Image 1 (cartoon, rainbow, N blue to C red):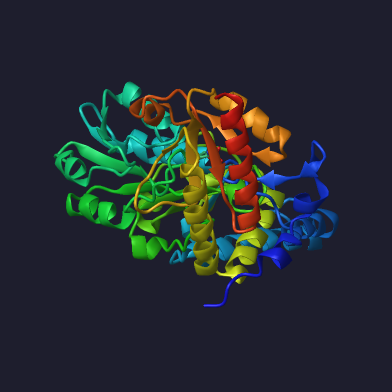
Image 2 (spheres, rainbow, N blue to C red):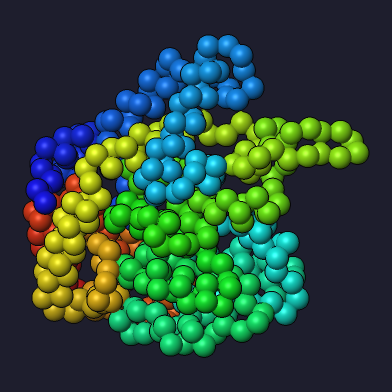
Length: 408
Ligand code: PMP
């Protein structure tokens, strides 16, 4: 496998060399929150908006046709990217949160009843907790939690013991945004299926960093966002198995999701349109299509290999600094390093790093239960993309060491 030419690829991202922070080169290590868009995506969006835009599906004129083609070919690009069997299994949503809410309402409200149980893990993002909690409150159902160990790995024995005849769904993150752990979702899906239970995978932190094949995973639902995938905000995907989606109720009602409407009865459109009420985010969808084509062109295996080398180097450099505690040391991790420096407040670390041009995220990362598990209110999180370099890891390590000495 040839390596990626990182220096050349960095040239695709205007922000990386055009933005200076406090007179320094930007070191962008907040990719788990939102990654940057390459010129290819920005140009595709500009071309769509300049020359191809109209409302989709209902038009007979040239531009409506062009917009529909752009939108639907973005769906096909996403289908190929995650290896879904059919385009109709790919639903455009506004993001991961929206996709999970769609399942909680469209599937959960029909299939979860009083006394039923939903299994989630202790490392979930709030987006994969709160919609289920709201559903459980409404239905009198309850959440069972897969515990995580000190390294950040899920306890699979405990997981297997949570199943019973009331289990209706498993919801698990493919990759933990707070710890970086890559959960063994394939194995966990097989366990759930052995009990006849469907699985929703929150893939927000996975799709940009490793090959995701929804058929090989055999998952029932898979959710992710465009803005963590070198695409725009306002767009995301819910992949769902066709048979499940067909049985599911729509969540939002309105135009485009119907076949016929009368005051007596409405019949719904076929999937995926049944779940895409109203005018969808056409331009962001086209951008997402361009983003997955860009990433596929690089090759996810090469992206993963480079990011893994950054993770190994970053872990080595940061753990060598006195007082640094890395939170999340699972054996299989994505390129996310959550850490604290002795007793220094993570927000102070974040703003001191910003002084050096380094962008990281600080806080609870919308994963308060996992913060509680490790007894910390917050962490500093450096999250890497394929466009990051070893020199940037050195800059981070140097700045962390400087901050450590300031507070000694
Ligand atoms: N799940 C995980 C694991 C995430 O990291 C995020 C974003 N931080 C989300 C869900 C929510 O994604 P969005 O805000 O794009 O809906």
